[in-house]
Length: 536
Image (cartoon, rainbow, N blue to C red; front, side, top):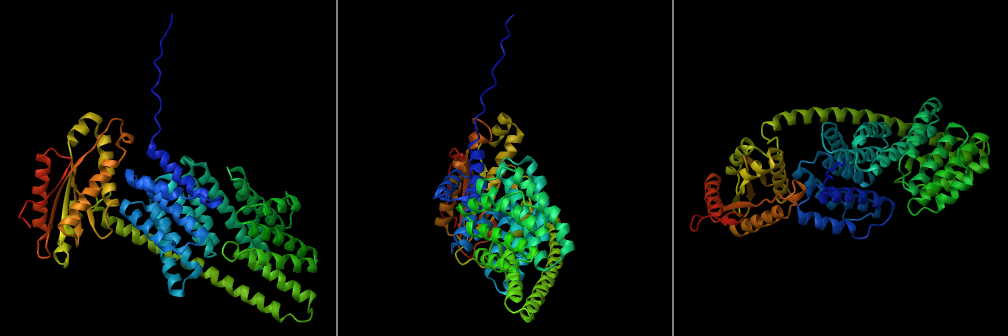
């Protein structure tokens, strides 16, 4: 008997999901080589299609690239990412934006700037710890915060964040993110060991070594790019020197590969020289210590290997004291005193950062409870109560160029629910809300009034500008790939627009916009209509 088994329909790739994965791969690619204009090209496509989640990841890739090439537009890139993340309710990439700004400030900022950045970094970390976002975005946020804490030399906090990021990676769609967390975690532990070695804290150094080895083993087991694998091997070699154990690698083999790296070659070679200097110091070969530590201090950069450089300078000072002027220990004593003071300040910063984290977490919890009453659970937009509060506030403010109201209604939404089911309908509402929020300024408001009706309040907008904005929003909504929500799905919206002079009452403009929306519906929908003639 022949049994015919029906073939399962072919799996159609989701273009939006594929674009999101590609965006994350670009975040990786900018760190190991050039990507040309791929970020801008993909970003333009994401904007055109209304893929705001993809656009946010690409903006983060642009931030990472700006860091690497020292682009003067870095602050503007970070600001744009923050605006988009806030508009889209993306706590994870908002945290990444705040952490990126903090990291940039740590390198160049004044004392007041540093304090503000410490607060922003605490806010970013608290956001992550209370967020339930997508795994790849969360892992990205954790990495950004941990890297920023590492630049502040708060390696204990960096290690905690990498540990917290690890569970997020269980369902991660991109193995490379797993590798990034493992690599960065290993690097943070090696930096801590360099700091402990500089301070001659032998007991703590011995306790830190097994932790560093475990993180290095985890990194080696991950899907590392070849260049990262070389760096992990060099870090492992350095940990062996710091802990007084045999290395698993031959120094000549490591040096050959480190010198061939396209990125971070000098820093990696500097770590090798530092490992040689540490071993020479253990053997009492101070002439070799002098040569190797000086070379290490030259190669290790102040940005990405500051603690290794500090240890190299300390060893160079020791060597100079012993080989140059054995009876003069003043320079070495001063160096030890300065290092102790710096370490004490660092430990104080660790305590302050923990206290700041707790304060921010409590503040966020309080704000979340207050915000919950004003936010629509499905879309993350303001609900009717939040909209009413905003409307009251608008009455008390001057509007030099007037105020505009856009009422947005989904055409034939009942048919969408009846045909595709309410879960698809809910996804449509969420996507509409996200697209509207991405298409306005942070100062403006998008709210869901209920059902399939949304309102947009535009401050300082005249009638012509309001109509152009409505047409732009309609274009964005039409460009969304609705097939990725459900095959065959098509969505259109009708928009009623009302704009008034500075003296207009906001509630009257809402009524006029409702009249315009009714007219758009009566004309068949899928159109924008301005307030009735003469109403303004």
